[in-house]
Length: 241
Image 1 (cartoon, rainbow, N blue to C red):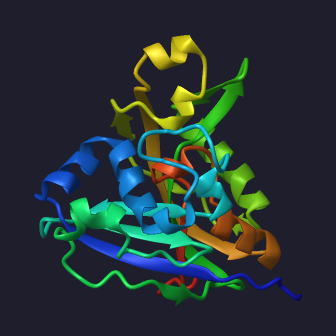
Image 2: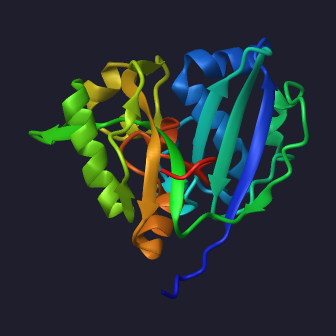
Image 3: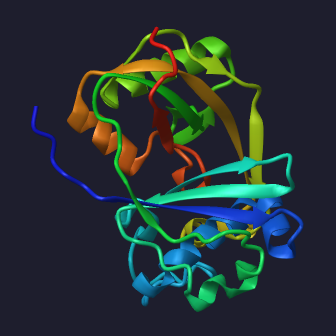
């Protein structure tokens, strides 16, 4: 099967977790969003994503397919894997406030995704359902599993087994965001605070539709993609199921 080509750029940011800007990003998801987006500030001349200026591009993150996945390590570092369809520029002045927290070179590299056969996957997800125009977090193991089976099929995957689902981890922000500023006065008055309930899903799957899978890898899965959810990480399994 012919699969349309796309270029995925990845950067690994290895950061000192004790750095003030990084500590702020750990406790406030919007600060982490701003840290990630600083690598693309040169492409956003008409949109100030730090203050939420409401002119310019309507959805700067999605237009560049920017995703990130974050992990806290026992060695005192936080690692942020950033992926996009445009190469990040970490020398942008907007990155200056956290630049000295970098512990290694974050030069972007081309990522060649796996598009056939069996894979092992990992996904930090925000499983939700819609009710009266609102997204509500799913809470039960059964609901989350059913959500992932549906999403996986759309992502060109056949799950080889029920996924492992870890305990919920809540991401929070007390920062007014551009999205809440653009809403009603009532929403703006709330200060833009939010809590996102997330789960890490892991398991094994078989790729059944390479094009659908590539689309899912490029654009992400589910809600809260601006805040570190939805980036599907895949690798070859060490042993076949």
